[in-house]
Length: 408
Image 1 (cartoon, rainbow, N blue to C red):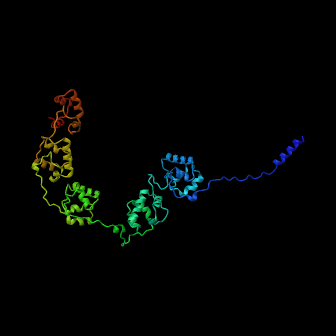
Image 2 (cartoon, one colour):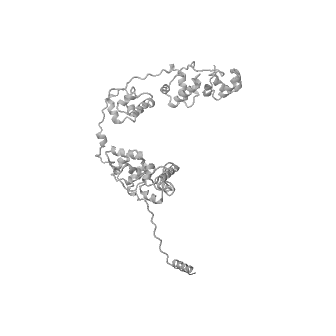
Image 3 (tube, one colour):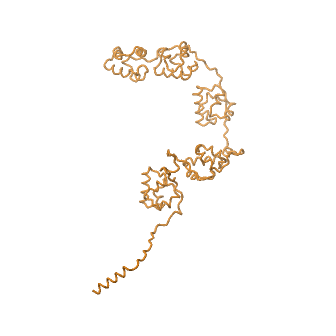
């Protein structure tokens, strides 16, 4: 009994004591490596690089898997933050070093417009002469654009010189320039004394000219005169297409836009246009089934009329009579009437077939037969006789008359 009483008294004394404060618990964390961090793009990091940032192998695998899930690329810091393998504390440690845009209110990465196109962001006034490729990337330019901007700066001698010169950088669109212009720490105008050191330091290769006829010069010939291959092709196309095969005068050559005024003056003393008299076509001896586009132009037709006649003749396989030429669409009727009254028509080489023997492809492509082609092909299987096929077709007289022109 005494023993039980002693235990009860001791318990009462223990429970009546004031509670002692529980000691603070401090979790031991790994030493922060933020002092060793530098700017990084999380889209370019591999497994080992994520681990160097302090993530475990399992966390790294989760981050890389998450990147694949969101489309193979993190579009914003906010998106990266949602990866559950990155704690809030770790994200705060890395945030200022992450080369990604923030997030806008509408849920799209800041720095991107409604169409997903990256926009330029400027934090304040800046001197573009002092920016590195990485600085241009942070501003919103692509890697390729940043490289082109630096190349252009080097071309100018290492400085953009003025806003005018900066604007001439082809990679910077007018829209982007208008955004950048108020923040550029550059003079507005280019000094009159400015001379491009890149141009001045380049020893100009002197072209060895010789007397030449521009109508006879081929691709390699133009290239030997200092033109690029692309420029040479443009000159030849201008001559052959726009001028229908030849420069008629020096003025024709000078009008070619890839030949600068300076270049033309260099070449001018050596240009020897052969002033041979253009042979005139004797249209009384020119077959209307072989007359060319150029000859039709020479006769006075416009390009539309000439093209229509050549095209229709090709589809028919040749004209059988002159009336067909007059039925061509989009032509100068009066001019054509005059032409067919002068020029002969030889139809002896035009292909003609029987309905039974005509090739299927020919039937289906010929303007006069194509709408009846399937019927002809079907009827001649069981009725290999032209007279029976004509009866079965039951064509309007004018259609049958046209078709019979090409039936032997």
